[in-house]
Image (cartoon, rainbow, N blue to C red; front, side, top):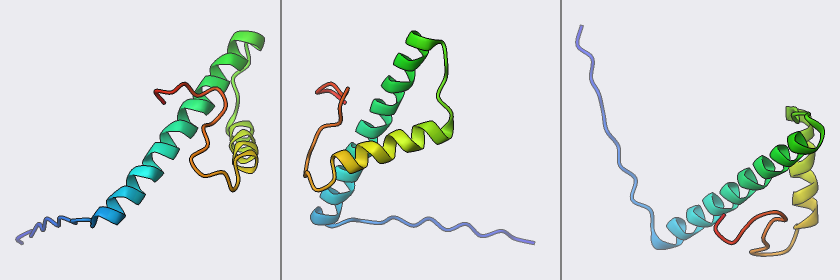
Length: 80
């Protein structure tokens, strides 16, 4: 039996590429902020945060920054 393989390439418009880039930057900032918070928690209390605690922190950050376009997340350096 022969197996066929297909390759697809999506070419995004400039607008779509810009939106995707913005979403990727926001995800990177959120990840770095949560990582920093978890590292600080471990340094202070020798306790690692579980998935539920990290989700709650992410939700709190989202509520805090809701409606603020381009807001930086707390604890995030300019290079995040």
